[in-house]
Length: 321
Ligand SMILES: NC(=O)C[C@H](N)C(=O)O
Image (cartoon, rainbow, N blue to C red; front, top):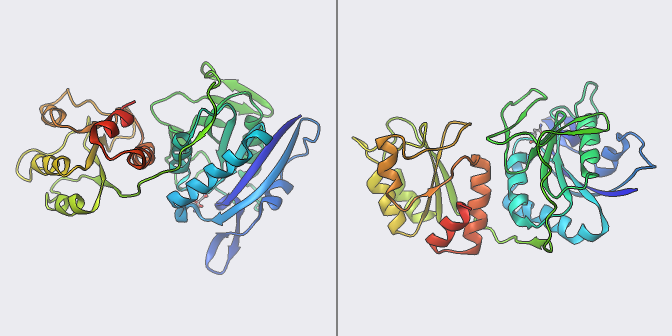
């Protein structure tokens, strides 16, 4: 018999129609009421940690979720976090960094249609999540629409359809069919060290999406107010270096002690700063490369890295590992 803890946080899965539109209202107990009876093989306990639309999730909420897993870790075999889908990928990445050495699954799920509606995807996602939380596997995973995605690789790519999440630059971990779990890749070894909870986060970060014609002056503001800036450049990671040249501004940021992470606006295949002249000029600077990470994972990891250290070399080392 597996013991699972369901941690409810809100989202569409727990939403009810109101005069102002859908808003979270159903509790953990309501969600449990929709789970098919599996009394012989699994027992699910639950806690209603918060009830928010995930648009209102903040880094402090990630800490609350991580702490709840940590505090109940010894008593359960696996964890299911029900969550709104809009910022679910940020939370799954943040939990992956805050909870190190997980030897048990922490599974995040949600739905695109509230659990009380007919044709809802919530019952399937919740059932799948509980099923995957019974696996002997460590780590943070997103379970959605029958697929299992690593916590640092999920991105919400659709705003309405039920197949809303994709695994970016990494294979799906598994597919769920009824009670069967079909793995696509080698199951990662269960971690051996003791679980650690690492919740120091620095929220003084900024994501800058470039566009043709962006004024370099914006960097003057970023230099004063941020400890980390993530620049979503073009294609392989290129940054304009003629006319409205941004390279001197990036130098100024680095000199001021700001961690500058380069990523791309392309969803897939990551950056390659060596391919083009516009990238090589940048690669000679003390920037941090994001390789093929998602922006969601970069944001969470940069907050976590800056929570540990202000030394740029150490931040770079953490980010590029
Ligand atoms: N499908 C959803 O869960 C969307 C909702 N706005 C949320 O993120 O909480």
